[in-house]
Length: 78
Image (tube, rainbow, N blue to C red; front, side, top):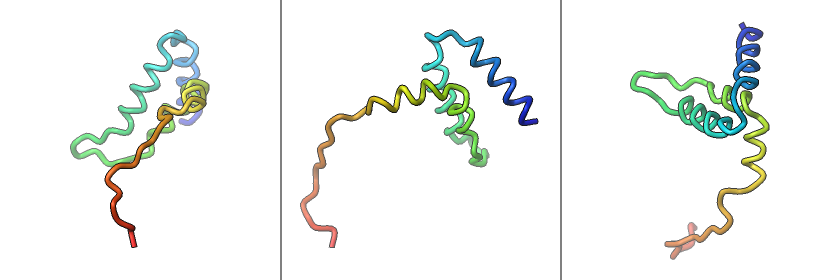
């Protein structure tokens, strides 16, 4: 079963145009991490990561947040 899934992922990877890989990966990521009513949470996120690993790595090279400002911290957490 793993070999069939792996072959399918390779086929999708090869047939997906470069211009669409990031968008498809993003859509897959959100789809597998969104719970439906009555849906049990399973580890499905690896599909998005394994399908377009290079694209994920490229996105992680540049952090989405460059500046972080903490607001509303008035008291010590002690």
